[in-house]
Amino acid sequence: MIQGIVVLSFFRIVVMKKNFASRMSRGLFKAVCCLVLFFLPVPEAAASGPYPNSHFATVDNLKLHYRVWEPGAETVKGNVLLVHGFSGSTFSWEEVADSLSRLGYRVVAADVPPFGYSDRKPRQNQSVTARATLFNAFLEDRFPGKQWHIAGHSMGGGIVQAMALMEPERFVSVCFVAPTLFQKTEQGRRGAPPLWLRIPGLTTFAGHLAESWFLTENRIRTSLASAYGEPPSREQVQAYLEPLTVPGTARAILNSARFSKELASLDVENFSVPALAVWGENDTWVSLASRREIAESIAGLQLEVIEDAGHNPMETHFDPFMTLWLTFLNNL
Image (tube, rainbow, N blue to C red):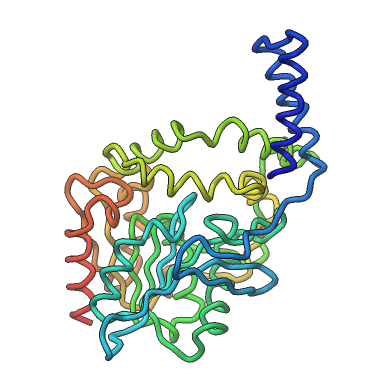
């Protein structure tokens, strides 16, 4: 990142001194800078954590950033794993985690690579079953022998669905929040990226362009407003923006389809763990209508809708969300 800033600053100085600071020349030199950045290595996630309760674990050659909230009571009610959605991080679950720990649960929230502060290896397998395998291995590595309540938001909903289908004996319950539920996965099936993303080097170039121009505070604010259904606070915008600007994020995201391969064949009709699904009434990102048929394939699923909520009800409608989830947990 520092190397990139130095290169970009050098070209800006040259342009300004020679009076070529037109929009076209600035854009040209930024493009040249991105080409130069193509040859720079992608740094790994920082070794020191961004939060007081940050930890790192290396599982299957990937560095995972996770946070632990120890229970506020002597008796542990249970263990909870929280998995965020696309472009999210552990911050997405912060208020939920604080609340559950005060109620006596041990809570773990982890960043799904390449998001948050986990690894950004450009060729990592980002299929839903690969991520589920990674997280099941993480739980066994760091918390062996324990059983878990798991919750997944949006993309994370598909991950926890796969985790429970692959190792149902590990889990006491599942909470889906606006989840990207799937009907089936097929072992060996690979992603199908657009043709332009298969050109060698182009994903790196496009990734640097995205990090330089697209991932801005205004765009994140607009995106969050759409997901929340209400204007986000400055703190929320910054909390989402900061990890997305870690070098290598956009490149890894663009490579997701190219290097994704399903590791197992799964079918939603085999789902056997007690489950709750919560949707926001006004969710336009992953609507209930788009996943209702799959949700109804899960035997015994409890389905709840929060009025006036959007795609992130655990953040924007915390009280009704927690009431629904805690009632579900208390009735297990």
